[in-house]
Length: 396
Image (cartoon, rainbow, N blue to C red; front, side):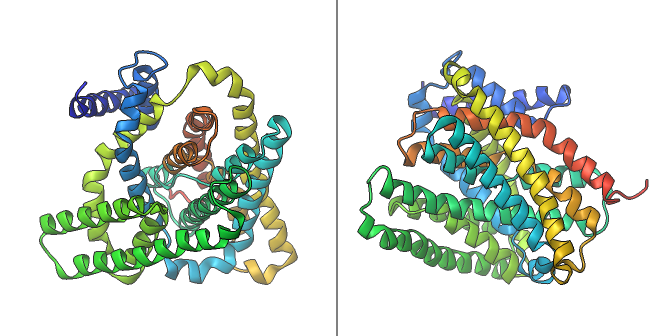
């Protein structure tokens, strides 16, 4: 089937699946994934495995857009003022999530690479789902801002950890890089990404500050995004570091950063629908029974890590009050449960993990997709509960 035709089919069926899901009060994302599952190799095979490989650049483009959005949440001014108020909370929920997922998955599976990769993926959260609940409610106070900031830090360290762990696993388990070249390879991966990100971020700032016409801004920014993804792919380095840095530079170094994200949001919806529908097509029903126990462990361990870890952070605040002097105890108590939604970046990294490392095809993506359906159903409810409990919703 012609590639443009299949893209059109994926877009319209994914969109209709998302709309149908909303009729049943389900997240659109769940509709996209289920639609992809129905159309994928496990059922109708309209989206075949060769098609998924052919359309891989769309996955990369979507993940690059997600990286830009994550970078846009790393607002230095807010983090600088409030870091000391939530640093122990952030450390508690992120470290315990990683530790619980890694230990339990390794204990059950005995697969160290799989366990450590799932531990890294457990850090990520979904700002879009959290922001959707915040916008739906009439919120007030610092809790929503703290929630978004911790979520952005979780995603940043997830991406950075993913880059480092994939390299280390290739060295010590799969020997694609020699031990002697480990630091050099890591340095190349990170340093080249930082240099490219700084240059393209500077270009994006020039476009935002010096050009007024919206169409010209959109054309130039899309060009920058394509370069931010295409150049790293050309040199086999991580484009996620590049896009994260561009987003962080734009939001922190120009007052007109909203122009950038308005142009981005004008194109991101159809790309993300295609990406999530194609992700659903990777769901392999034949291996679902084999990973169902691991999926349940991942969900349970991540939930416990986020909620209990944040409370450990609260305990740290009580022991070291000077480090958390401006954060309300209720905020630290309920922030963990509000960080449970998980979607886009986790799906993208799971797909990249199967491409970069010789895992059994479909194991990580099927496990992650199954858990994401759960977290996208339960997560928004927990975000709403946290907003209510912290008094962050204004009276109507």
